[in-house]
Image 1 (cartoon, rainbow over the protein chains, first blue to last red):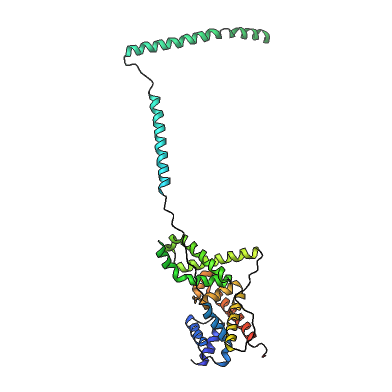
Image 2 (cartoon, each protein chain N blue to C red; image 1 turned 60 degrees about the horizontal axis):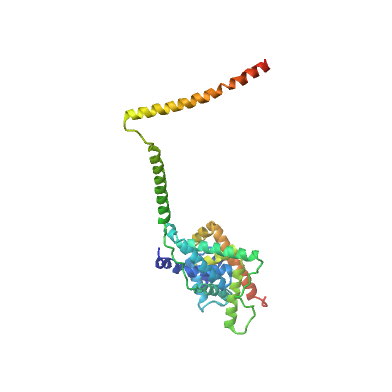
Length: 145
Length: 169
């Protein structure tokens, strides 16, 4: 290769202006044994690049095993939860409706009457007791007059 | 993606990753360790491979960051990075040894460059990435890559010539 061209390329090289192809030309030239005497000093530079290109990864690679995918676990859990919730609520509403009932309307009316009388008795009893409170009011009225 | 497919992706680039790690970490053993860890990290990211423009670029980024982390860890624990793969310079009468010496000297000079220059020089002159690839990888524009590259090459030339002419001029 012409010496001029190499010198020119070398100059461009140090300015960072060479293309990859041109750098390959330089590399070829300087690793050959026909390097001009005054360019001898650049030989180690390109020799070093060639040396540095040689290192390789030599460990055996042990990749961690894939964990089996357990996407069904959360799925199963949510289904269980839903079923559980459904069952509990269903049971509660069932027991609410079961109040016991009379099939014969006359018996039903009788029983209702009975129940209302019982309530009336209680109310009368308690209002009777409330009459005693009037005494308090009278006395307080006397004092505060 | 199974192991076989993963290895098909990774095997062509693993040597490059190793050399990049070695450029940054200097020690061979550490570079091997780092590469191994990076590959395992990549394995855990394998589901994203399809979305990536380039698996290699992604791998390089991971390697770079991993090495920076390692270096940071080292400097914070006050351990000095020692260059072990460089033998002290001494001129030998045998030409072959002298050449070998100068090569090691250049390699040492490369490792003495500031990190950014070292990375750019490595990616360009050793791994032969294009400037646009380097720019993308390092978040620089192409002009910055060219300038950094030129600076790195000139620094090495200066040091190399200084040594070459030692005792002559």
